[in-house]
Length: 236
Image (cartoon, rainbow, N blue to C red; front, side, top):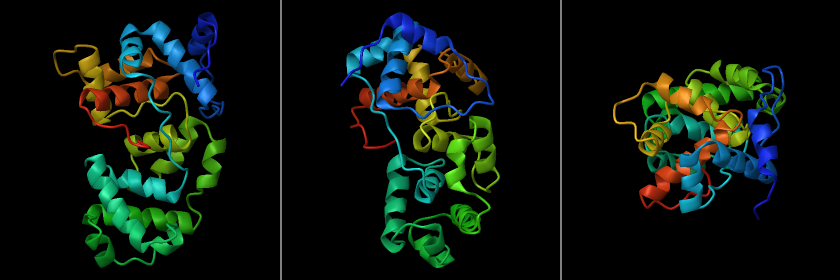
């Protein structure tokens, strides 16, 4: 159900920037609706996407080891390919925990379709969580910067992977995952950018959508899928 709020209120919320020392509240259906309305007022192109294709889902994932493994698998491959590899892993790791994952040998990971590099990354992640070097339950109490830094201490988790976790698992409202190919493609198409803009240029465009960049990202993913006739997944 769409929640109506005064447009002036939505705009005021959109212009308010919380200090970096604050822990932003996770998106909820109510604040997600507020963000959509604020962005529609601010950006005609985003408003057109929502009008034509409907509001995007509030895509989310469980804050868990399994989600981080899946994000690592999604690096530089299609979502479908990563999901297939994850499903093969899940079939042999039940329940999907870091402790059980540590028991898998290299052969089991390769049979699931993981490259040697991603086998190393996922096993290092399992080791970090099982030994307490990374405590996922503490991330919700951290600022965006702190949570990103904590995740990036783990080998194989770079800025994009950390941001995707913050955006989908922690549901932070103002995350822009630089380097996301689908977002970049959608943004270039929506803004009719003829040349090949740099990451800095695309990030500067996204910067205008603060503090709702994670909402804008969902609009752009929705646009990317809709213009290609692809059904929206349950999660992203």
